[in-house]
Length: 173
Image (cartoon, rainbow, N blue to C red; front, side, top):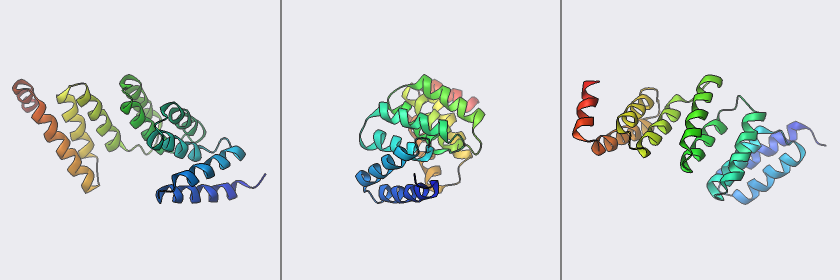
């Protein structure tokens, strides 16, 4: 068995392949890493991303994200990626529980992104006041100008969806 350092370097190469759009070779390299180090959390995260985003295999995506969080509990990427997946497949209650767990257990949480996802769920559920407030909170914690512009657009969109009474309630708060 080769050293972990070799597989860390292989992981960096796999990450580069994926970034360059060479998903198949990146996936193959990640699978090779996990055949030798099945508890390599970052490789599980990347495989979860491939299964979810490129292959639409949500069950395998969930499986790998859960292993990533188990084996690499301080690595933030799988927490957010798992949230995206749960919301995209309509499992809002699980997503909300997961976000709550993340807020309470993970250091260095990207509150902006998670609040944006809470806003997205509230919007899907037609709770426009909550959606507006989550997007506003996401914007407040953000540093990226493009993200801030996106939150402004989200806030405008949900405001346009609100009834006159919801808009009045929003102004009163």
